[in-house]
Image 1 (cartoon, helix red, strand yellow):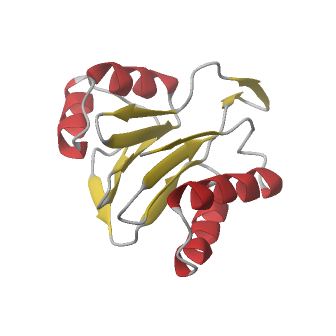
Image 2 (tube, rainbow, N blue to C red; image 1 turned 135 degrees about the vertical axis):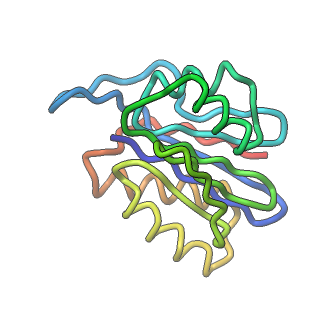
Image 3 (cartoon, one colour; image 1 turned 90 degrees about the horizontal axis):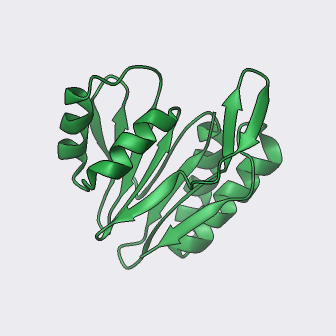
Length: 156
């Protein structure tokens, strides 16, 4: 249970995530952000801290190479990874598919529906990437129990 939101306007690109670590009906705050930077790529994980650890330690930025690395690691469970670059947004799913999305925004996690709606409206208004991601996270946190502040936002 998480929200990871990403957005690119072709000049800057941003990703952000919440801090919740969920177990049944309880949550703790993670001391480690669910989003990070690899070179000029931004990456975030929802669903599994094990996947986050393996993906982060891999140092891989290419979504297809990262997917292959996770496939070789025989990762199970429910998880999604969002990869944000200057030009594209990718989603890697727990079935090891890689989707390059048509839009310049995307989100994963249980707070996905709220974040996607907010990002769609912010994209129509051509908002700055950091403003769009911060706004989407704030709205998701306001209307969902699946997104717990503090939020971490990274921008390149």
